Image 1 (tube, rainbow, N blue to C red):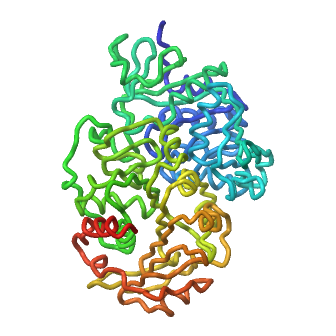
Image 2: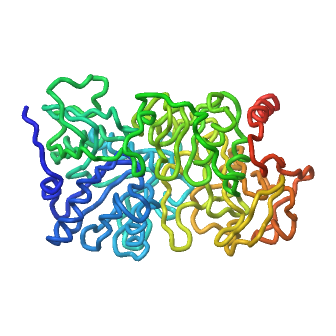
Length: 524
């Protein structure tokens, strides 16, 4: 079997107009950047290909550059399927402007979809998305008017309702690995995630399509350890070699992110003490020893840095959707990876665990919250971010902690001397009369008796059968002027309303190990 090695430009020439194209990667990791860049160059020079259907499991890009930001050209893309668009704002803008059709499915559903397609199954049947905007009785996962096709339906099976998701069968995929041997076997020893690349390759191959994989190097036939091989050579049609490919968008290669070495966590510097750090600290106080935990993007992604400072990272198991288990997860452009991971599994298997209720607790962000406890993180203002793994996780974790500032847009506040000082209030309310889109259904959560907390820089709320209850307030913050007056509804005030711990608003550790033990002993 001879290996077909192409340049990135030659690989880009293989993509035909109106192809269904899958691009692998997760955030800023595992992205076949050289081929994506070549595809953009081809379109700008040749005005081809056109009318592509683009599929990506989660956001790929560095917000305004790289990744799928390169493909945000009208004419190149006709429609896009993705779980999140927040890391590719130019592509999101095409959706907002209704210039391409935008479909948004849960991240777990999308990662599992390729396994279904590989086995010639018609789609994914799941409970994930019921009661949210994925439900066709709301939006059916359609992000704009251009997305006219109905691809999600409600079905009744075994006496209960399910959602059935369908997606186009792919014609071509662009994936990434570390090494290819002379027969095209692909290993990922320097990758920080393994994603769903195997499932994508199987789906495309079994559909008679073309599988392209970008790697750092080509090695001798049979020299790769079989346990490191993630994609068998008979699935691979072409390889593109880019010896300069980055591990993530900010890291050329960190061996501690792929398990080659372990680094002392004490070497990680604490984040600066800001209102976001305060929120992450207070959210982390909800942890209990021995728990398996998911961490979302935004403020919640700062929690691992808190656990490192507090020395509690070994008391819990932190996980992220991409398939990383254990260690200290990164955030911002390193989100999806971790220092010192204990295991890296394929993303569909991570979501099997999540969807089955395996998570003890999940920490996520919010953009809007209403009196019923509904949460919107997916479409607000001029942003059509999409769900990522938010819906899979919030519907199935045993406990939830949502984090964010009380107001947005110009908020200036400062933790100082054990208090929170509000210097300039935000222009936008986040606690609203009715959320713009239901990403998390608070009514269903209340009916299920799910434990839910909302942590802000100045107040903590909990979800009760009658709605939101204010349970804590920051020292130095006025109840009416600084909290209630900036909410569109009146939460119930707990009879035992108490101050948030003053240590949250000072430099240095806050004693989370003691708090976790107290949580465990109290059974909270």
